[in-house]
Image 1 (cartoon, one colour):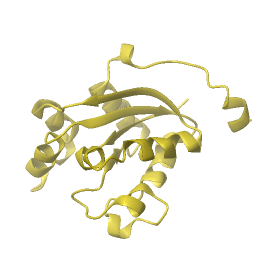
Image 2 (tube, helix red, strand yellow):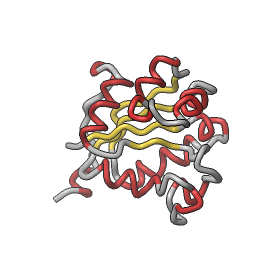
Image 3 (cartoon, one colour):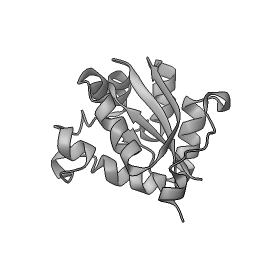
Image 4 (cartoon, helix red, strand yellow):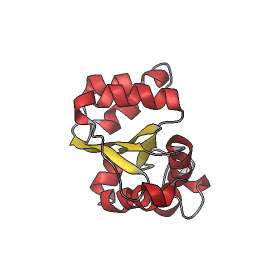
Length: 149
Protein backbone atom coordinates (compact mmCIF):
# COMPACT_ATOMS: atom_id res chain seq x y z
CA UNK A 1 0.00 0.00 0.00
CA UNK A 2 1.33 3.44 -0.95
CA UNK A 3 2.10 6.06 1.71
CA UNK A 4 2.41 9.84 1.59
CA UNK A 5 3.57 12.58 3.92
CA UNK A 6 1.30 15.53 4.61
CA UNK A 7 1.89 18.51 6.88
CA UNK A 8 -0.64 21.04 8.04
CA UNK A 9 1.43 24.19 8.13
CA UNK A 10 1.42 26.84 10.89
CA UNK A 11 -1.36 28.84 9.24
CA UNK A 12 -3.64 25.80 9.10
CA UNK A 13 -2.99 25.03 12.76
CA UNK A 14 -3.43 28.66 13.85
CA UNK A 15 -6.67 29.01 11.88
CA UNK A 16 -8.18 25.91 13.53
CA UNK A 17 -8.47 23.91 10.30
CA UNK A 18 -6.79 20.68 11.48
CA UNK A 19 -10.04 18.75 11.95
CA UNK A 20 -11.51 19.91 8.65
CA UNK A 21 -8.35 18.91 6.79
CA UNK A 22 -8.09 15.48 8.47
CA UNK A 23 -11.73 14.82 7.66
CA UNK A 24 -11.15 15.22 3.92
CA UNK A 25 -8.55 12.44 3.83
CA UNK A 26 -10.59 10.17 6.09
CA UNK A 27 -13.70 10.74 3.96
CA UNK A 28 -11.72 9.83 0.84
CA UNK A 29 -10.96 6.47 2.46
CA UNK A 30 -7.28 6.87 3.25
CA UNK A 31 -5.87 5.38 6.42
CA UNK A 32 -3.97 7.52 8.93
CA UNK A 33 -0.85 5.65 10.09
CA UNK A 34 1.16 8.48 11.67
CA UNK A 35 0.20 11.77 13.31
CA UNK A 36 1.94 14.29 15.54
CA UNK A 37 1.81 17.93 16.52
CA UNK A 38 5.37 19.23 16.44
CA UNK A 39 7.30 22.45 16.88
CA UNK A 40 9.72 22.23 13.99
CA UNK A 41 13.41 22.80 14.61
CA UNK A 42 15.36 24.99 12.20
CA UNK A 43 17.50 21.97 11.29
CA UNK A 44 14.46 19.85 10.36
CA UNK A 45 12.92 22.73 8.40
CA UNK A 46 16.14 23.18 6.40
CA UNK A 47 16.32 19.45 5.66
CA UNK A 48 12.69 19.33 4.60
CA UNK A 49 13.05 22.29 2.22
CA UNK A 50 16.56 21.32 1.08
CA UNK A 51 15.48 21.20 -2.59
CA UNK A 52 14.81 24.95 -2.38
CA UNK A 53 18.02 25.96 -0.56
CA UNK A 54 19.36 27.94 -3.53
CA UNK A 55 16.12 29.86 -4.08
CA UNK A 56 15.45 33.35 -2.78
CA UNK A 57 12.41 32.25 -0.76
CA UNK A 58 14.23 29.47 1.18
CA UNK A 59 14.87 31.54 4.32
CA UNK A 60 11.25 32.66 4.40
CA UNK A 61 10.01 29.06 4.11
CA UNK A 62 12.19 27.99 7.00
CA UNK A 63 11.18 30.99 9.12
CA UNK A 64 7.49 30.33 8.48
CA UNK A 65 7.54 26.60 9.19
CA UNK A 66 9.28 27.10 12.56
CA UNK A 67 6.98 29.98 13.58
CA UNK A 68 4.24 27.79 15.09
CA UNK A 69 3.47 24.07 15.50
CA UNK A 70 2.61 21.92 12.50
CA UNK A 71 0.71 18.65 12.21
CA UNK A 72 2.83 15.98 10.51
CA UNK A 73 0.96 13.00 9.09
CA UNK A 74 1.44 9.81 7.13
CA UNK A 75 -1.53 8.52 5.14
CA UNK A 76 -1.85 5.18 3.38
CA UNK A 77 -3.95 3.99 0.46
CA UNK A 78 -3.97 3.12 -3.21
CA UNK A 79 -2.79 6.12 -5.24
CA UNK A 80 -2.60 8.25 -2.08
CA UNK A 81 0.24 10.50 -3.31
CA UNK A 82 -1.53 11.67 -6.48
CA UNK A 83 -4.97 11.73 -4.87
CA UNK A 84 -3.75 13.79 -1.89
CA UNK A 85 -2.28 16.35 -4.29
CA UNK A 86 -5.69 16.71 -5.94
CA UNK A 87 -7.42 17.08 -2.56
CA UNK A 88 -4.86 19.73 -1.57
CA UNK A 89 -5.17 21.80 -4.77
CA UNK A 90 -2.80 24.10 -6.64
CA UNK A 91 0.12 25.65 -4.74
CA UNK A 92 -1.30 29.12 -5.26
CA UNK A 93 -4.76 29.19 -3.64
CA UNK A 94 -5.90 31.74 -6.25
CA UNK A 95 -5.44 28.98 -8.86
CA UNK A 96 -6.84 26.15 -6.72
CA UNK A 97 -10.21 24.72 -7.65
CA UNK A 98 -13.16 25.08 -5.28
CA UNK A 99 -13.56 21.86 -3.32
CA UNK A 100 -9.83 21.54 -2.70
CA UNK A 101 -8.28 22.47 0.65
CA UNK A 102 -6.40 25.43 -0.80
CA UNK A 103 -9.33 26.43 -3.01
CA UNK A 104 -11.72 26.47 -0.07
CA UNK A 105 -9.50 27.86 2.69
CA UNK A 106 -6.36 29.35 1.12
CA UNK A 107 -5.74 33.03 0.57
CA UNK A 108 -2.12 33.42 -0.58
CA UNK A 109 0.71 31.28 -1.88
CA UNK A 110 2.86 32.05 1.16
CA UNK A 111 0.11 30.84 3.48
CA UNK A 112 -1.28 27.84 1.63
CA UNK A 113 -2.12 25.66 4.65
CA UNK A 114 -0.72 22.27 3.76
CA UNK A 115 2.22 20.42 2.26
CA UNK A 116 1.90 17.12 0.42
CA UNK A 117 4.59 14.92 -1.06
CA UNK A 118 4.73 15.27 -4.84
CA UNK A 119 5.93 11.74 -5.70
CA UNK A 120 6.30 8.31 -4.11
CA UNK A 121 10.07 8.78 -3.78
CA UNK A 122 9.61 12.21 -2.17
CA UNK A 123 7.05 10.72 0.23
CA UNK A 124 9.50 8.03 1.30
CA UNK A 125 12.21 10.63 1.98
CA UNK A 126 9.87 12.96 3.85
CA UNK A 127 8.31 10.19 5.95
CA UNK A 128 11.79 9.04 7.01
CA UNK A 129 12.74 12.64 7.83
CA UNK A 130 9.69 13.37 10.01
CA UNK A 131 8.91 9.96 11.56
CA UNK A 132 10.79 7.09 13.13
CA UNK A 133 9.49 3.77 11.85
CA UNK A 134 8.25 2.92 15.38
CA UNK A 135 5.97 5.99 15.25
CA UNK A 136 4.03 4.55 12.32
CA UNK A 137 1.16 2.19 12.98
CA UNK A 138 0.05 -0.78 10.94
CA UNK A 139 -3.60 -1.61 11.37
CA UNK A 140 -6.48 -3.12 9.46
CA UNK A 141 -9.32 -0.83 8.48
CA UNK A 142 -12.70 -2.53 8.30
CA UNK A 143 -13.61 -0.25 5.40
CA UNK A 144 -10.91 -1.70 3.08
CA UNK A 145 -13.31 -4.25 1.59
CA UNK A 146 -15.70 -1.40 0.75
CA UNK A 147 -12.95 0.67 -0.90
CA UNK A 148 -10.83 -1.82 -2.83
CA UNK A 149 -11.77 -4.73 -5.08
